[in-house]
Image 1: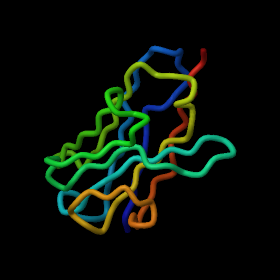
Image 2: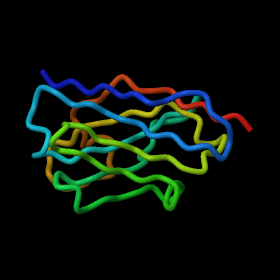
Image 3: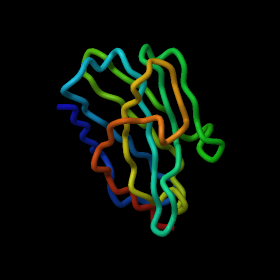
Image 4: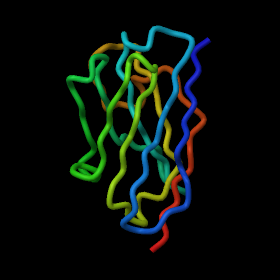
Length: 124
């Protein structure tokens, strides 16, 4: 059974940094790409970042480029999202997701397993 468990969210102030983690189990982690999405209240879930199975290819949403960094440690079956210079508009539930492919994808519908999410709240 595939399981994705996010952690690292919290209540922070604008300008702070956070590192989100997503621990994966139940499948061969290193074979598949991973992604991070977020969903703010009243809005649709949106793509944030994705990383290929080897970590050699990464994609970011335009709104987070330069502030967010996705990475993975295949030895630890974990994908990370480093978030710097947090803004109030980054407030959302952040989800990690597994793709059934090895290459990166930005499309929400192309991910087949999701975590339960971790809340990030940024105060101004």
